[in-house]
Image 1 (tube, helix red, strand yellow):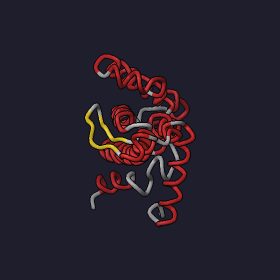
Image 2: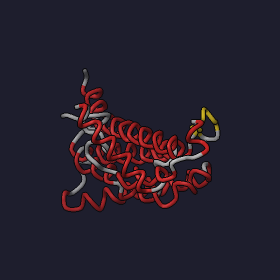
Image 3: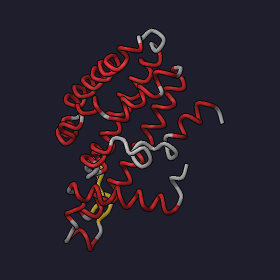
Length: 203
């Protein structure tokens, strides 16, 4: 397996940002009430993480160590502003649903953490692989959490207005706690416990 594939693959399970590193839990809890929100947040994180990793990796040899964090934040904040405006213009419903958590990608631990821990120390190609792997890992975690919360909390499964199926028992009496914050904590806790128990998350 080449270095690009290795860097990409590690973000899926070995260093999954949500389920292993426990980063980005705030948006994971807040927006994982539906598949729509999970995919929308993943798209935002992909654009920002990929863009910031590329820029920071390209200029890593020219950034003074003492000012690197402010420079990273300016780069990330600029990309987040662009994404926020694009969502507002072309995806207004999703922009409204994600709310404050979209601009808060600026301080998302995944984005800033990868900038500091990886992109600032590695070349562009490896930084691209790292960004893609971490984003896919983030997406997989969000989709698992959202799938459980949406099915149990609403009793049906629909994505961007397309209805797939309903659960007869839950559609009439959904377990509403799963679309509330406590439900998010419960689902993430159960997933972490399940993966630890089965050995999936062993490094």
